[in-house]
Image (tube, rainbow, N blue to C red; front, side):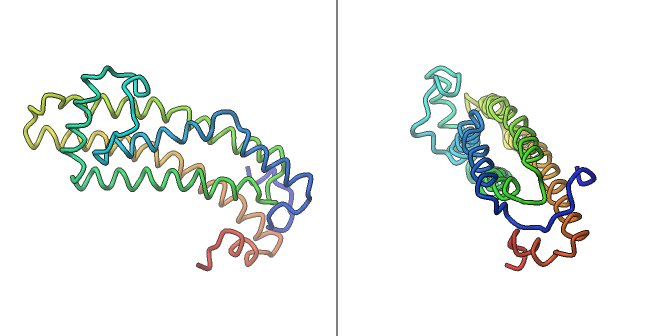
Amino acid sequence: MSGSIKGIAQTPVTDVGAGIQREALWKQEKGILAKINWYNVLIKALNGDIKGLTGEMLGIDQQLLESLEKVSGLIKDYKRVQETRNMLGKVMDIYTEKLPRLIQDDNFTNQQAVVIVQSFDLILDDSRQLVNTILKTILKDNLLMMDDKQRYDTINEVYLSVRRHYGTICYLYNKLLYASYLRSYESKNLEGFAMYYSLYK
């Protein structure tokens, strides 16, 4: 993408009309915030706390919902589960904190900002499927009959699924951040880039 970006100084969008357009792009992108909620659902399930979740919401019946509560309560303190929750928290941080800043980055044109949102939105389309897959994986132990190794293998499967998802999101974000860095380098405004992305903190 960097080759197609105009060489302009690295700043947030300052033109009022363009700024409003990009802010609206983020806020009105169809279903994007609703999709982010699926990460919250998964964090709750991995935290042994499914209050507020319903079988209808998760696509499972009441019996499986009760099983999910038992199993998630059993596995919530496993180190791998804690690491998985931490990764999901980082995913949400990218969408709620870092992506809006990318969209406002004046190193990207308005058209490129649209493409950025659409790209992240495509990944979000996988979030519900990710949640469903992981819940089904957890529910393999719905009778609590697994031994320690079987349970660990199941938890590790969940961890690896989330890590792949997280890796895809990080790859896209870092690639775009590097594109902005290159434009700032070319315009001799690396300090502005660092300050804009709070790299001095």
